[in-house]
Length: 328
Ligand SMILES: NC(=O)c1ccc[n+]([C@@H]2O[C@H](COP(=O)([O-])OP(=O)(O)OC[C@H]3O[C@@H](n4cnc5c(N)ncnc54)[C@H](OP(=O)(O)O)[C@@H]3O)[C@@H](O)[C@H]2O)c1
Image (cartoon, rainbow, N blue to C red):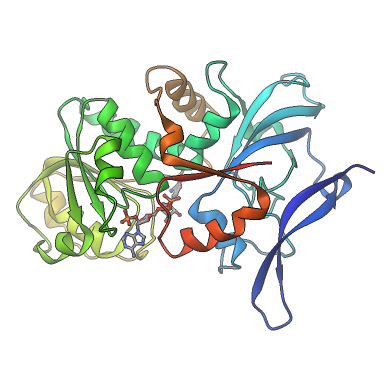
């Protein structure tokens, strides 16, 4: 029986959770139509929630987290996918209640998989990962309403996964990016991504009058929720587009109808986990050509399964900068 290595999160008798790299058997994987040899996975905030037993994420432990996978098909019972093909699987139930990508193998339904574009390596696709897909979905929503060139766009959590890819991609596409960060020593990193201005998180919150401040920005990408989202909504120009995708600060925020009925602002929710394959293909194809990001290596750290546990702790405490990918 074929064995492979995987990170396993287990609940201890005292109720706390622990992570260890252990051997698993292929027969332990769920019965789905694609067996994928994982080449790379990536670390996202949701993985850290699953790996720490956060409520409402993973129901049953022991469990292998990892919502992102890029690898090679080793077995397929679906005519559309052949053995040896490169695939990307992100979101759906992968790594939530289905054994995930922090492992050498996953077995997934083919309806979760897309073919990895030829001009994107599996490594590049995971440097982008769910964080990049989410940034891409936010940017595509903004672009539906306004051309990106010369737009003034504010991005929260700018040194994090979603924020750093959003900052880099928006700069490439000609937008002026204002980065909100809680980190005092990451200016070089953020300017290198292409942002034109940096605002410290506390300064942004302390200098914003709710529910309506002076209008300063044409669009926003928010990963934080809470006070940051309240202040972003208050600071939009007329016809502003705010995309909300995360809640690292809080799921709650404070506003009134005024930013919407006096300034015609729009608040748009983004969900990368269950968005359609059609939309995913568009976003991944963009990343393989018109959105091709150079020098991704500079903002990514590569670890193996054994070194991943430290990075999980860092992302949970908001201390990670850029992206972490896992080579299996
Ligand atoms: N809707 C979706 O489809 C989707 C997909 C991916 C992620 N998400 C969500 O988006 C959020 C970010 O995910 P990620 O993978 O980018 O995580 P990440 O890499 O940890 O980035 C989050 C960043 O937010 C900032 N931050 C941390 N604590 C904060 C706080 N209390 N208040 C304000 N900002 C704070 C930090 O950046 P600075 O130090 O630079 O401020 C941190 O690096 C998470 O809530 C995640 O669940 C949603």
